[in-house]
Length: 153
Image (cartoon, rainbow, N blue to C red):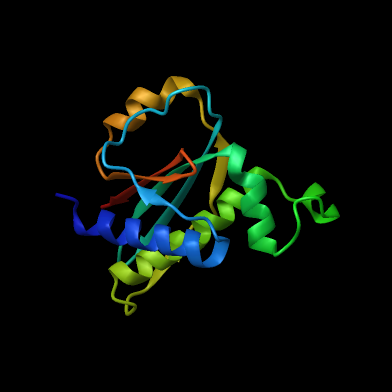
């Protein structure tokens, strides 16, 4: 059974992807390493205050262009794409999702500070260690999985 923090994270991540980015995501029952050679970004963000912890998201680079277009309300061939990177898009998603998750976990009444999201390329050698972690959910967008980890201290 999924713990409350993961349930909240899954609901909010799925809702934000659909409502703000027009990306329709389905929950993945078995969280496993994706097949094939999909390049991922690893985005980390900590939070502190009345609740302390961190979020880690693995986001497929391949769908980042669509995310940028939907986030900015632009066509994929717009000149603004030259200034925004896949890391920027993934970090902004983390910022939106992370803030909403912490706020919901505190029943919108607590104090918290979010760290600036840090995005980097995910090393394929990290898969086994990452998947062994608890507190992990996965959503699928057009056959590509997003992985999200919630750790509350």
